Length: 461
Image (cartoon, rainbow, N blue to C red; front, side, top):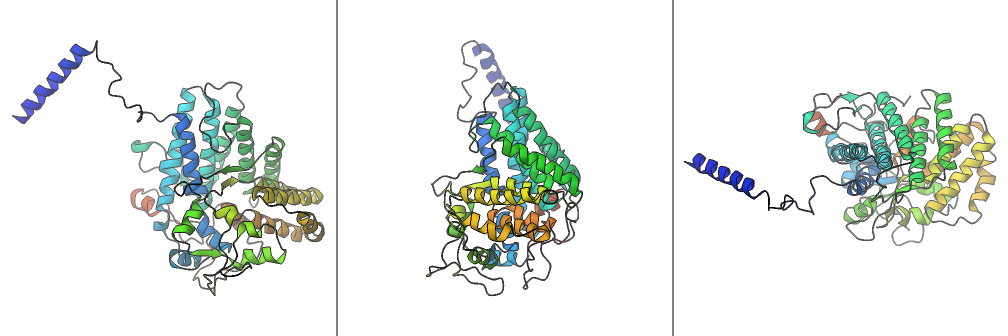
């Protein structure tokens, strides 16, 4: 009886729709506040915000890495454990999901929409953001899915591709982005862009800057090729007028910087003694920007890994206020890449670019150095050459790129050039990679056996 009634109602509905089709507005049941397709102008800021909050500046990315690199020290709970290299697959499932289900999927859909709507400038932005998303991921995990990763329900167990192939795909995306952004015509402007306000040249510069980053990462595999490619891309970015690629946060509590939110809600990290000691020794003017005074003092103190000090300095206003930006890539980094690439052939140029990088870092953090950079350069950079100069370059980069993944990447690809000492409370050496997410291990049989987190990635020789 129920089946008969349902069939009758369904037949009546069809009849009504057929008879009324001439006078019922076909858009009557379309909710303008819930469109069936998310517009490009909404996708762009959504991708940027997710990338900034959960990946580039995310708690599961930069916090453990900054502790391993001794810029921060974990003093309690999960942070203390992760600072001792207790980092497991269930720690990164949310991060893995954001990289793929949020940022990567949305960027892929945006590329398709932009192609359908003859909007190469928008496609170029999407390719830059996807390249950065994949770059962050592969530098944590090595082999990752890509070609089969964004097919939705049509493929829930994508194949993993080698890191070598992922790097090739990153290069292809960035080259494609430059080509798209260089197009003389685009049907739709870059709307909703919180990073560069839709400026096409800025996005071209960003693509070249990221090409420089991912080229320099391969210096241990083929130094000459890596340095030549990195130098060419860095010059292209700087010649184009590269400015910091960053995401600015709001003044509201709910739209605040992710490190600020972490310190407000949990706060179980303090500044590490390694970084604070570096800054104190040279009276670095960035110190008040990067750190606070230790509790009940007017001095800056970092906690060691063996004598945990909850009263030590906390991350400062340039990186941990509610509206501190998340830096996707700083101008200082581009100058450091350029200096490294020049090191073996033109030390004078390399020294000049280290100085340029230091000045750019001051500007990014809103610090007026006075004569400090000039004085430091004369005493500590101009006097050095060879291995000593290279170590000084990475010391300055370590400071300038506080709380960024590139510090851990530099540590690995330079074989710990700064001579950091592993946590004596740990039962293993420095982490060299992330474990695969538990969600991937449980549901994708293609997930590789990663061994341990001390196993090196492809480019880490």
